[in-house]
Image 1 (cartoon, rainbow, N blue to C red):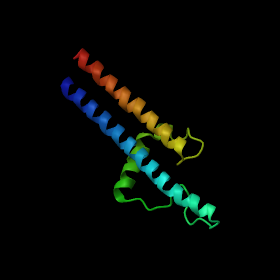
Image 2: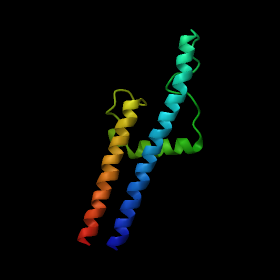
Image 3: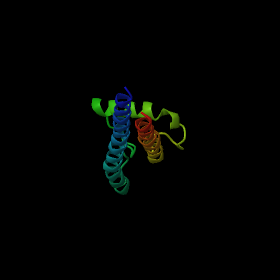
Length: 115
């Protein structure tokens, strides 16, 4: 029984960290791809039709990943100065890696040793 719990904790740790990291990566790609167009519009003196935060419609998978990441990192949702910016996503990623990655991994190792 403890062996199954240890395996489940490890898998959960990896899956949660991958979800939050994937959400951060998708955010970073979106930000960098829209920032170039936004800067070019500003330099040309054109009013921007889309802000650098990206007003794109997210796909179903992207929305599911972002929703899951938001739920998993909800304890630190209010720590950033403004939600949806780089610091917010970085804080959420750091939280997930520390709590879910290191914390669940450590718990799995402790349970394996004591089993």
